[in-house]
Length: 240
Ligand SMILES: C[S@@+](CC[C@H](N)C(=O)[O-])C[C@H]1O[C@@H](n2cnc3c(N)ncnc32)[C@H](O)[C@@H]1O
Image 1 (tube, rainbow, N blue to C red):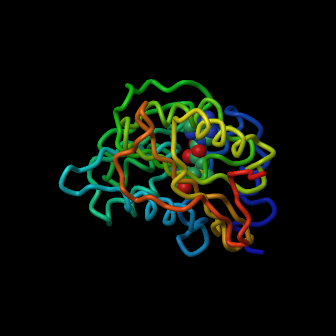
Image 2 (spheres, rainbow, N blue to C red; image 1 turned 90 degrees about the vertical axis):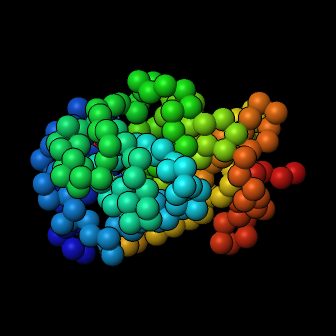
């Protein structure tokens, strides 16, 4: 196992993180070397997240995107290559935000804590992306997932996020998304198992949620079958 992702690495420390205080200290120390430790062929979650988001990106309208837990900007780099320009970034760590600023991609970068309600207006964005931040000791499903839905546009706003598979069920993500769907807040466009940190053989669930109008009709016409795992087992829907 590589020293960049193996035992004693910053990545291993991130997995052992317990709270925001741990995270701030960890990412302050890691920020400058983060991209070198996690090149795109090793840590592919940002690329897959951005590619999924770009399916909903409208270049003529320049969809407004919030990259939540933006880190150093790996998601935004792929979004920008796809033509996105109106990208903001939120993160807990000022050190990671400083690295994100060096990309020159983001319009606004701001400190935010996704374990609490965020200081963002309702329906401010078309798309929220969130890669690598729903992981051990970082951010749980509540209130973050509902906050993402609150800040994307009604009827067509999209949330694209990774959840590391180890906490997908045990951390309450699956349950929260099922509840949001049952309440008519979102349509689950897809929920796929993806490679995450390839050097470690990690996997995550990549979710794409579309915010519904109160009447239950989204703007996007990308209707799809219920989200299904590669094994053929329904991931999010439990059928009798
Ligand atoms: C593994 S990095 C992922 C960064 C980036 N999205 C990527 O994929 O490279 C996790 C990020 O979550 C941020 N983070 C941790 N706890 C957070 C919180 N409570 N609110 C917002 N961001 C948080 C960290 O500062 C870090 O930048």
